[in-house]
Image 1 (cartoon, rainbow, N blue to C red):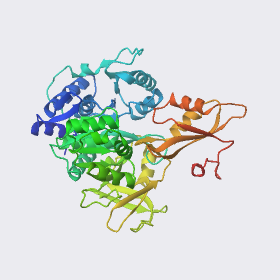
Image 2 (image 1 turned 90 degrees about the vertical axis):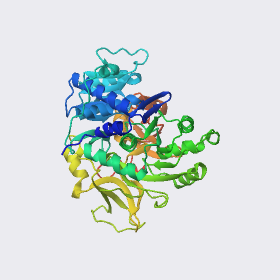
Image 3 (image 1 turned 90 degrees about the horizontal axis):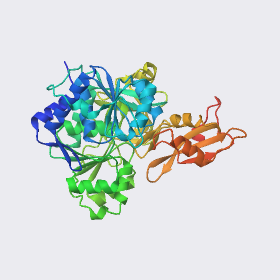
Length: 504
């Protein structure tokens, strides 16, 4: 048996060749054209020496070329590593080195940082889309268009269904970012099954405002839309006013987003002036949506929000509320086909249904990753007892609906982006004035959580809040740096001399 995830694109191009696949302002790309472009890109990769099993990183915003590169890489039988365009050089180097990437495809506006990171990781193959920013000089790189120059006919290397198609980086349940290995079969199932549950049709127009390098947009939007030949209208960067304009302009029928996006749409001053009557459903994930936000959005926009739950390690969708009639409001729904969940206490004992029986959410099924790339110990720990331990806390009601209560880990979710405290702490510790540091999430009415640092300085050293904020801002992506710093003489510690974040 063989399976290549890119077969979905080939099928959509065959059944709906003239159907619009992607819209970006005035640019439109049909399914036949998208498939052909992906073939040409694949041919260019082959001519450039990429072979089945090689790893290629893609660092692009929401532009049509992301889909071209993504499916082109898959057609070769290579492995895709999607990367955030906001990453700084040290972060780029880490992901490239950890994944073993041979090539980095990056965006001109961030090519300077990308090139530095690639050089540090020993990656010499750099492909750039667009012009590098002002003052950026990079030699010896390929232009994205050069890989589209040759038309060698259809390309589609067959793979084993269990072969890795995409490595998505995540903090996992603890520690620094780890690469979740997602297979062709897992990603196909998590396009086909959720798409049917979402009710996606070939006449739907889906607003893609979530970043395509994130598993939510990659799996639940790009893959789902291609599987069912729906139209994607792209926003390179989310802006509520722009989103409302695009909803009206393109007749968007499906809006998928994180809670902060729903809040932004609700509170935008132009909301009432825009025609959003084309919307038929909202889909929310990434973090629990506040009950008052859900209720107000449904009332003001006249659509139902269906909430789901998933992680990078589960290829996005794990549970989902399938319809207005069958949903349980404020829950994240029931497990999708082929997936099981259970709630367990710290000893591993399964807890019975009930609001008072809160425990860790465990998952197993067709959507769960193969493992963490190159990390057998972390994989074994995550799959203790044969179930994937999510690090999230929740409970199940008597009808099988899951309610997510909290995060078990220290992971901060800022506006739908994951911020790993240790990564920020590591940067703080490189500052000559910092003795101790802890990074925590604090409640924020707009973003859900905001990043805060608690710091103790070295004796005789001085640093202001502004000094430390700027120091970290220069070294990490813009969504990660702390917006506030609290100074203490010392940080609380436990018996093992570890800093007790829960005391902060």
